[in-house]
Image 1 (cartoon, rainbow, N blue to C red):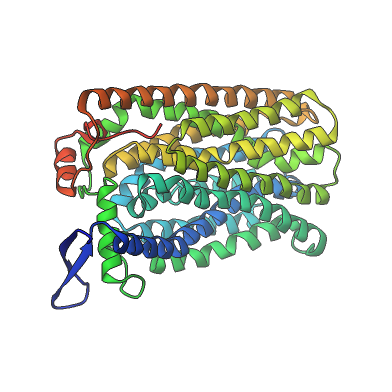
Image 2 (tube, one colour):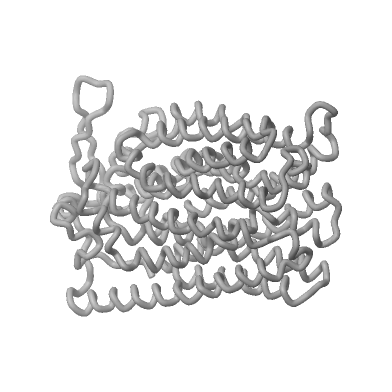
Length: 492
């Protein structure tokens, strides 16, 4: 017989309290968990993925717009295009940590929904840009507002999923950015070949077609995005499923309710493990920023026409979708992050070596595919790794914000390394990216080994870890222990 625990759950909107008896183990508990996860997997994960698809689509469409006449239409000269790319990351960087604190003061649905509306306005407004100043201004503010979704999503997902369930769901979320790359190429090809208009240039149509849906999604998000297990609606889950969701959230170290815990803020800043993660993420963001912005140009320089180049950007992203999902699925099951980060970075290394060493179109195109297959899995792997290994809402949120802040600061380097004068071989760009993929491998392996050693030390000192109750977790967080608690074990 299952061990049970009597839970008193207050249902919103009722004048009485319903007593909900929730099994704590056994087949009945497993059945409730399975139903709950299925419902969340069908609602929360796909919807967040859809939001990030438009986030990535609006961010990266400037690369496609370049081949559709953006530079001529806005009178860009010299390094203007590269500088416009950099300004997006300036805005994205400065709004990382503020957004994490805003997430503690407003509901996730409001933060994500409002920022979506605002970046949708910026993205659509790029169609009206007449010069360099207009383009820079819209890109800068779009960077500020886009930072409301990407960094917040891993925190939101950590409210609903356990540590060993997180990478796969984060992969589904961030994997949508690879779909965005593929769809962006298809949309750009369709606009260039079928929707050219005398009074509206193809690059303007591209910004409008991809920007307007974001506005409507932002409005919808305010009303339908789940905020926490405690606020799941009656029509969506049963009282038993809701109670289990709350209990699962508490076992995932989501019990602190403080709006701003300065000790958690300082703990995140002082944690040396976060700086290892930031170095890995810097190594990722330099090649990633250059890849998303310059892939259409790179493919065009291989000898394809502009319209065909738009279409030929699709297969590399299709290849990346496979590795994103497979790497993260196996990572969750192995309960290991570092090995899979290093393995993914190795794929990217192979790609850059092919791009540097050969001048044949086939080898270069294969290299571009390997780069995508290697870079994109690292995004969800790193974000889930940091979320897994930081206890406390504020510490986790600030750690993720630090990761993104450091990464996006150096993403500006990626926007400056594919100069027109280095075409068509782009040796400088490929060489810089290859060096930073090696950096990722070195620090991912080093961090994984450090965490394994720390887990072994705790096992030897404290024995087999026990699962803390929500009350014990709250007490540990109040005492400033966080992930240094003897019962905590790191994902390596």
